[in-house]
Amino acid sequence: MLRHLRITLKGLCEFRETLEPLAAERTAKKATRDDLVELERILRSFKSNLITHESKWFEVMSEDLKFHSYLSHIGGNRVFEAAPYTVYENSFPYVERFLSKERVFMGENYQDVYKILRAIERRGSNKASALIQRHIREFVPTMEENKKQQYGSGGLP
Image (cartoon, rainbow, N blue to C red):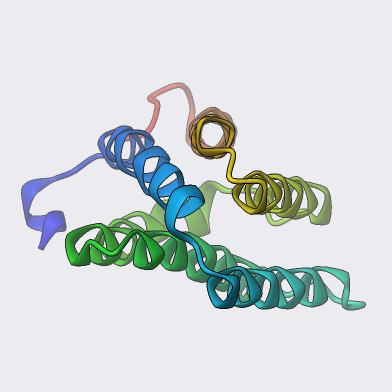
């Protein structure tokens, strides 16, 4: 759907920077013990895929999507819940081509998610919001640089 509108990666990231911090705030306020257990399960799976002998990039990114989606689910708004899937579906071609598949980068991604979950557990809504916004903002420059290395200085569409 969004591809027909020629949505840019930058536009998708701006949307995420607005929506996901709100979802993280709501999650920190509303998460039940069962919700925290599920987020912890996702985090363990994320780590397990990360530390295998041969890092499983697609599986790691899938766990990242599950984490972000579950945060939106906890907030209780079905539109928030649908947004991560729509955004990931439309940004995945960019992510697959331009996001580092190096274990170090994936480890940084895991550390971000770990910190976000810990802030949510402590009911730190402002901290969770700030962490998730920073987490999202870090991706665009990384992908811009990788695209420049592959295609020159045109920047991302």
